[in-house]
Amino acid sequence: MIDRNELSNCFFLFAGTPAFFDSAKGIRSLPPLYDRIGMIADDGFSNPMQTQIVLLKFDVKKLEVVSRRVIEIYTEAYSEVDKTRVSIRFTRAMIERVTGRFGGRVDVVPRLYLREFVDVLDKCALYDPYNPMDKYAFVPTENDLSLKVEEKAVMEVSW
Image (tube, rainbow, N blue to C red):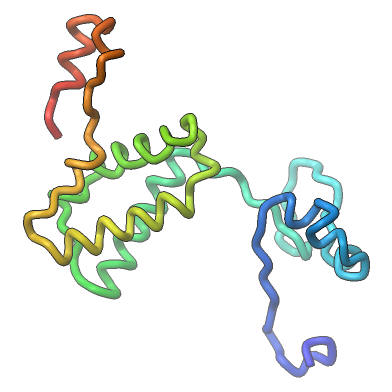
């Protein structure tokens, strides 16, 4: 039906990692499909008219922007988000903590982070005493003993 244009403005969207598109176990294992959606050599200019579009990797700024947009959508769908508990400072602390689990690589955590972020929004809406910063705040460890007095003072500031 799509080939006969009977479903106007209907598109297919496939999302995946580069391995999904390029490995022998992914789309490449289906030559007719791969020939149709294969990537044209990258010359630094993304063409949104192509069958396959490579998105730029996430960085901290993009994750912050997406977080604010999720708050907007959450507010429209459910209720106003408590900005005292889910502030910009909290969002940045959460991004730092979640990306820290992956060596600071932001590009590998967007789905994980966003799932956890929505969980925080839900818990804030459900439980008045819930304080998300308790989980994501910086907690000094034994390794921090080598820090200068000024550095320790900065880390002890409460949010």
